[in-house]
Image (tube, rainbow, N blue to C red):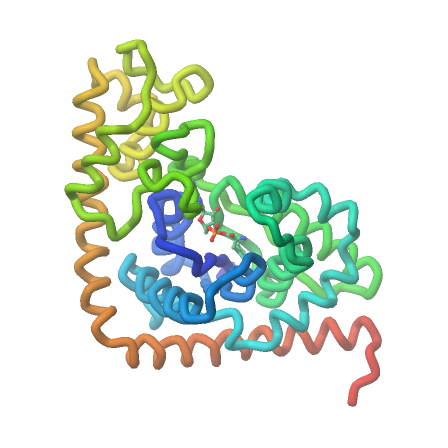
Amino acid sequence: MKRVLSGIQPSGELHLGNYLGAINHWVQMQHTTDAFFCIVDLHAITVPKSPGELGRDSLKLSQMLMAAGLDPEVCTIFVQSHLHEHAECAWLMECTVSFGELSRMTQFKDKSEQHDFISAGLFTYPALQAADILLYDADEVPVGDDQRQHIELTRDIAERFNSRYGDTFVLPVAVINNTGARVMDLQHPHKKMSKSLESPRGTVGLLDTPAIITKKIKAAVTDSETEVRYDVETKPGVSNLLSILGAATQNDPAELAVRYEDYGTLKVDTAEAVIEMLRPLQARFAELEADPAETMRLLRIGADKARGVASATLARAKQNIGLLSP
Ligand code: TYM
């Protein structure tokens, strides 16, 4: 069975991009692979966080993942900081990646423009991400399109480590599904939908009520034409709606386009499809939210399973480097 690992940050509310780009693919993959899903709280503190917020967000994110259909009996769900192996292995990665490589990461460039205080951790973020992946000997990393560069760098790091110290890490590949890989902001369809608070009207939260979802989708920016056509370059707003509708209903966006004659009907159908897709997730989330102790119990089991794999890989890496064992 293929080994799969992916991660998600506990920062703010999950949105449609996270769901269509990543989580719904994870739900399918858990049955056919040996899958690990990590709530990457150490990545979340690369930008300032208020202490109370972080734990709450991690717990809520675990419940959201389970509500979306990740089953802790089928796959492994765990919190990154529950294992010391991730931070420890990240140091080995930092000593294997170059300053130049990290400087070329577009996510760093984007994020460093959004904050006054740019932590060293924000810069070395991809080294920690490489540790997350390589510790699990992951063959595949299912992500949205925005993570492609980080996974390519992870491969480069693994290759360099293996050539310096001998065969240690499995080289992972990014698995990026066509449907939902790049969900764009409804108000700014040239920018990806993201958790940043800058554009709340452009971001559909997974816990948004049907009324709010309808309002946001109806207000989505389109263009001054009237023809429904799937063309990401010249019609980004309309194409984004078609992509969302396509991902929510398992249809091809270009094929869907021919069924519509006006933007209004497309928006109504897209809103309806999103509401129906999220309805069971929202109901299940309400149940899970009522029992945090049970979620914590499941996360402890997840951390134990993850540690079993990660500690062996870390020991192998340290041995291959030639660190004196205690
Ligand atoms: P994060 O938390 O920003 O996003 C989690 C997942 O959601 C996908 N995603 C999107 N997909 C389509 N359209 C969008 N608008 C959109 N926004 C987000 C992301 O591609 C991602 O798959 N660095 C990672 C977290 C991470 C990780 C890892 C991922 C840490 N360690 C190891 C994979 C493997 C991140 O910030 O994702």
